[in-house]
Image (cartoon, rainbow, N blue to C red; front, side, top):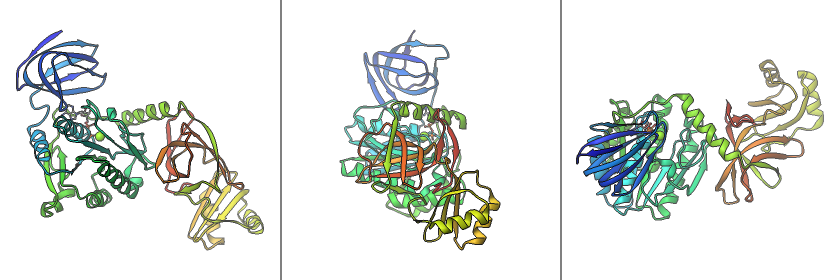
Length: 426
Ligand SMILES: Nc1ncnc2c1ncn2[C@@H]1O[C@H](COP(=O)(O)OP(=O)(O)O)[C@@H](O)[C@H]1O
Ligand SMILES: [Mg+2]
């Protein structure tokens, strides 16, 4: 169907649709389209379009697709916030903070497209490990725009950092450190604008501590606060009086859509499935390859008499044990129960006692790092031979591995997320 569009109007195009611009000029999430150019709107997605000049489009609409006139699909305050950032001295950093589904990612794409169109070298840091688009779920990543994009997942990945969980609340320090590292890389690679997209964890004391540390570690020139009402004010009000950071308030677009927890999870699982399709098992000798964020390998193997004594007193068939500064790490061949852990605590003086069942390690997600400590890719543990210190990992990574970072999530054979784990699960 052909549709005529008036300059200054705006619309929302819901997919699946393919759209060709016959004449005129449009901005699609800030990306400029002129005569004869085309774009696709995927099923389940809806793109905001601003009409820059009188235009006409030819659209092929699939079932459920529609084109709606939609005033304010890009709120006026998005345009003025982008304008302020684009007129500032470079390099500049814009940190976007808001609730879940408030439009953070969409605003990040909008701002980045507007800047790219003006010839600015734009890096986007995608610091939301639960909704990672540039990199894989459980990681945060960054890339440079080398063209305008209609979604964040079209930005090519330059580098990533492993978090090990989909929830920043499980590992907030790692998110702060990783975000800062990626920003430094972007700046040293010549970024003039660094757009930083964050997760939607904003409520409660721990979220406030996390966001405060994040803002302090980044010292952004702009703090873009995106909100429906005033839900983010408490997190950012301190920066009212800090003059090196300017707060820009924008509103959630009336076109924004809430997604369910399940929708997010399914999207991640599709990503793991695709990634691990090329995976094969690799076995690493833990004498040469270090583990990070684990108990295992950080202590000394328990002497046999002591292991035997514990076995008898706690009535546990222990197959391996290690003791460290203040911890005892034990592997048995049955499901651990609290009374036995309590008994172990009584018998020994260790502060931290970790008792796992042999095989518990299967499916734990890990990050593989090279010898420089840079993230290479994801893996899933297949098995550990505790006594001989060998670990098997399913991964598509074929480069040399220097270290293995243990995550806090377990995947099953079909790459579904089956359980969350505590920090240092083994
Ligand atoms: N300005 C907008 N125009 C059209 N759709 C929008 C707009 N802002 C948000 N959305 C839609 O709302 C949903 C949530 O937006 P998103 O940017 O992913 O939020 P967040 O990153 O804060 O979770 C997405 O489906 C997105 O496409
Ligand atoms: Mg997002």
